[in-house]
Length: 461
Ligand code: SF4
Image (cartoon, rainbow, N blue to C red; front, side, top):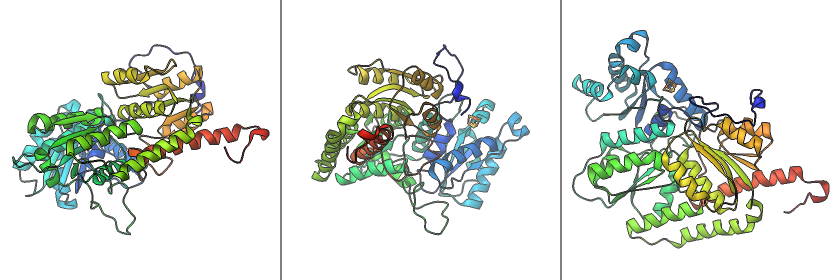
C-alpha cells in the first residue's frame, strides 16, 4: 500500500517488467478446470510450493477447501526428471483417495526439465498403476508463457482429449464450454439453455463443486461436475458453443477438427447484447423458440437500464481482468452509457486489440487499453493518476488503487479474496446483467451520497 503511494503519473516504456500483474499462473486455471469434472483429483507435477499456491489461490477465492496432489519435486527430481515421483503419486492417489480421474498439469519446473506427461501417463498405465475404469488426463501448463486463462484452456482441451469419442450416432445435444468464470455463471448458462428445453453437455462445470451447500459431511468429490460418460458423448453432439475466446477456442476447435462437431466461439454472455447473442445462438442451433420467461427477464434488464441510465451516463470506468471478462464488461459499460476509459488484461492476444478498437469506435473519449505482460495494474494506476475515473472494476488486488485514489471499486473476476457472493450469484445472462447494474449503481450512488452537500443529500434519488 505504501509503495503504491509512490506510483507516478510519468509513464515510461517498459519491457520484461510486470508490476502488480493482472493475471496469475497457468496451473491455477488448469486446477480450476479439472474441478469441473466429477470425481476428479487435480495433480500438480512440480514442487510442493507451486501446488500450495495454486490450491490456496482457489481456496481463498471460493472459500472451499480445494484438494490437489503434488509430485513433490526435490533436488533429485529437479535434475533427473520427475517420472518416478509422478508414477508413485498416481499409485498413491488411486490407492488412498480413490478418484475417478486424476487431472495432471505441469509447472514451470517440470516443463523446464522436459517431462513428457503423455509418456509418463502411458508408463503408469503399462505398469498397472491405473485401476480398471479409472482415468488420467493431462495438460502441459508452463507458466512462463500464458496465464491462468491459458492453463484453463489447456486443461479443457486435455480433458476433451482424454475422454471424447464418436460412436457415429448423434445424441442431439449441444456442447457448452464455459470460459473461466464462476460456478454461478456456469449454472446460469445452463439455466438459460434449460429454459429453452435444450439438452446440453457442459464441460467443465464447477457448479455444485465450489459453491455447494453445508451438509455437515466433508465430501472430497461432490455430486456435481461433468461425468466422464457425458464428456465422452461430446463427439456425437450437434454443435459446440465456446463462451470466451481465450479460454475455450482450443477445446471448440479440437472437437471440430477431431470429431466434426461444428464449433461456435463467442464471448462470455455478460451484459444485454452478449446475452442476446448467446440466447440467439442457442435458438438457431437447437431450432427451439425463446420462451416468454426469458423475454420477461430481458425486459427487466431493459427496464432497469432505462430507469437508471442517468446515473450511468458519462461515468468513466477503469478495469483490469481476464480478456474474456473485460471485453464483455467493456461492451456492457458502453451499453449503459459509461466510458470504459482504461482497460488492462495480463493475458495477451491479437484479438483483444481488434475487439477493443471495434467496441470503442463510437465512444467519444480517448480510451486506453493494453494486453500482455506489461498491461498490469501499475500501468492502470498511472493512467488514473493522469486522468481519474469514477469507478474501478477488477479483482481484490485493485482495492489498493481504489483506496489510494479514493475511487469506488466493484469486485469482479479472479481472485476475490475479501468478499463473498461471486460463487453464488451470476454475472452472466440477464439476471447477471441486473446484478452487475445493481453493483455499479450501489458503488456510484453510495459515492454520490457520501459526497453530497447537506442541501443536496436526498432521501430518494
Ligand atoms: S509461476 Fe511457475 S513456479 Fe510459480 S507457482 Fe506458477 S507454476 Fe509454480
